[in-house]
Image 1 (cartoon, each protein chain N blue to C red):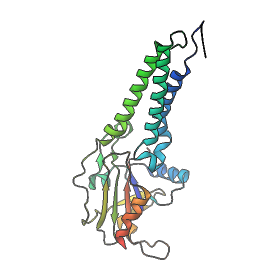
Image 2 (cartoon, chains in turn brown, cyan; image 1 turned 120 degrees about the vertical axis):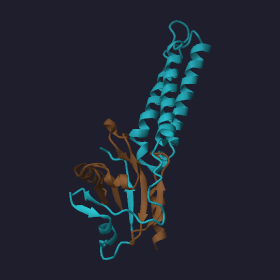
Image 3 (cartoon, rainbow over the protein chains, first blue to last red; image 1 turned 180 degrees about the vertical axis):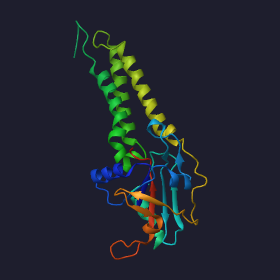
Image 4 (spheres, each protein chain N blue to C red; image 1 turned 45 degrees about the horizontal axis):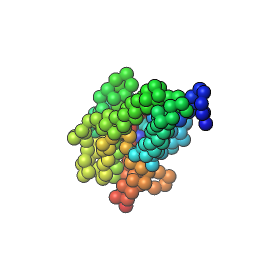
Amino acid sequence: MAAISVDPPDASRNLRAQRGYTYTFLSDQDAAVIKRYDLLHPKAGPDEHDVARPAEFLIDPSGTVRWVNLTESYWIRPTPEQLLQATNALR
Amino acid sequence: MATGGKPGWNWLLWAGFALSVIAFLSYFAFFVEFPSTRNFPWANLLLFAIAAGLLSTGIRRAFQRRQGYRGKIFGPILAGLSALIFGFFVFAIFVAARYMPASAAAPRVGATAPEFTLTDSDNKPVSLANLLTQPIGEAAPKGVMLVFYRGYW
């Protein structure tokens, strides 16, 4: 699992230390990858900062997308159970 | 309670107003941490319902037992403010949060995920290919879950 946002690396490092997250955090500060995935939510952050809209993609080893979740509300996110169920598609 | 003389303190009104404020703030400060109380804010809606009950009981006793309790003026004011807080909560959770980009060009099931290289929290470059090939322990990964999130800034 890898989490991607516009947060700088040191913000992600603090978050991992604070919350005990062990998976990879990737910084896309200029939102280039977020734009490539068409997930840019312009001016939705503080100070009208561009951020990513929440989205989850399951990618198999060949690089093919196997499962996508584009939530309709940013307060609604997949539960850990839903993510685990999605990974069953890889077995 | 208060009978005759000075009308008694109508604590139900203040408790109802305070609970409305708590019902609003506790979603963002606490309940948002747990999927079961975040995805549908039932705990906060329950707190708002209890607040409404306290306020309506307080207002009823202020008007029905005129000599008994205070609150004929500030009761409706506190109830109005609580209704505004509730309205703002409903708007923030159920309306404003749905204004999101359509993401019509986002990769779909069956498509090839666009390759990328980004910096991890130790300032090391990590590519999608790395994520898909670097062994986890002994075993090759069966895939990767990419989670895009808004960030904590």
